[in-house]
Length: 278
Image 1 (cartoon, one colour):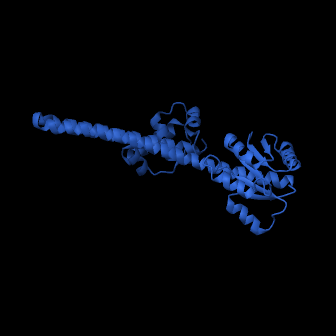
Image 2 (cartoon, rainbow, N blue to C red):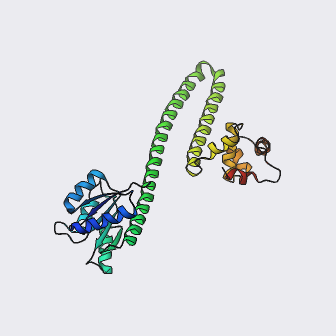
């Protein structure tokens, strides 16, 4: 169900009724808002943030072009797509004028139901892709910011530990080597966890239900098995997987053999192809 909100603006009430009736007949899930005042439409847009606006060109209070300029100059409403509708401005120069102002599309009146629905769906689809792209960028920005904060804390913590080692060199030099090895192990472990965390996040965006479906079919798989399966499905070579899992390529070869036995995969069946079904 697509409960999109569509704001329709036209100074003629009959035109409003005609467009609303088309949506009610062909797309009853759409929620339509309507007004014959472009000034009032600016307030409605700010308050409700519709998914799409269909705006008449020639209106006595404010032209469709001026309406779009004001809409796009408002930080709150600037990303709302607009389809311009007109019965008079029909040549290519007018089309260019509407698109230059910020309209996403252009439709002629009297409105044909098939064209209206098709152009509306196309505009909403483009907008949904745009919103998804923006959300992904925001998510990545948030993740990067949190990662920077976390790294800053880690660096501060390890800096204090290194400073304490400098003092220890003079008092108990025999313990320095032991503590350095421990510190190196902590850094290595945290780095591996961070790499796996980021990989899982990126992997789940592409293969959202892979782990759930895989473990449902093969409940005896360990976390290490699932991790190995995640790398295999991406077509990674044993050497690459070994580098990520901090082991030798031969160990990965053995692990793949054991994995095939654990999931009871028939001889000759490609492991990557089998895993891709999940």
